[in-house]
Image 1 (tube, one colour):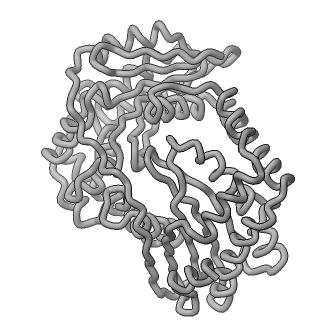
Image 2: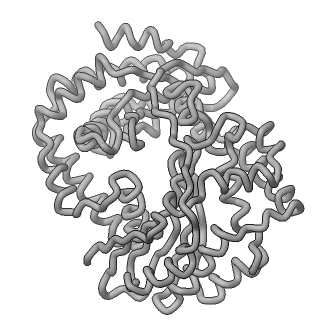
Length: 420
């Protein structure tokens, strides 16, 4: 399997990987325009725009968009994150050109029919309401807001209902004009694809676009803070975030190995101590997420009102203990989990296409899998212990609590325990 990468004269980028033996392909457009690229008055518009892409173009109605892909047994979807908006499809190899035509159509030619805007506005408002009714969704939005307070990166992807209720056709068109230039787009494909064919299709469809000066995302600042809301629920939801490296920092591999060893599986420290030994929760995990210029290591658990204080303090204690006695065996197990998860995931052309696009967005190139595996293998037990010490004692923190949490410690109290 060989990764090939090219760029049109206007900056539009193409990256692909042919996967021998496959009869299907994943193909999509990744636009470097997500939640963190919105001004405050635009919060939620990138997600709204993603919805509207499927509501009709100059050539196809909403039904015709769906039928074009589903008539050949394919699948089409989209998502919005804080750094990208993606439009993608999975089809059989003979239908790659069709998928490219449909995706290009919805990205380049949305009509933003006023009637469809109102219909989709209602759908998104329902989505926002559903998120508020889902504690383990809303708590991560609050945690993000406290981690990056008063910044685009800290705002919700869905946006507040009052802003979504006010977006106009002109607002949607304006966001496209600001952010959907050719140099802000990446065509990524994997599976039964031909790179030369992709280049030809990209030139025909996107080659006429003029480069635009996109707005640069505001640099991230991890602020930390606490959000706490008392509510009658069955469980108290606890989420702690600690500032961690971004994707461009070599320490990202250490951070990911650390969080895997701490709370990434059934053998992890938090799972064994908090759930298996003490029975304080059903769900507990730690994970490290990253953006281009920052990242967070997050710990989440749901427990009962009378046990949330004990769970929180034990979590801090386990973090401190990891800095003292993290073993070579634990680090080796976490490395193996990381490598296996990555390599198993890349057996899917959809996952592989997404990885290619993400790496091109961050690095401008696709490092080899061998290089990535070597970087994971290079992380030593001492590296993880040093990082664990930073997480346990010094890393800026944010805390979110939701449910029957009156007995939970404050962030200040947890910080005192970290420093003790």
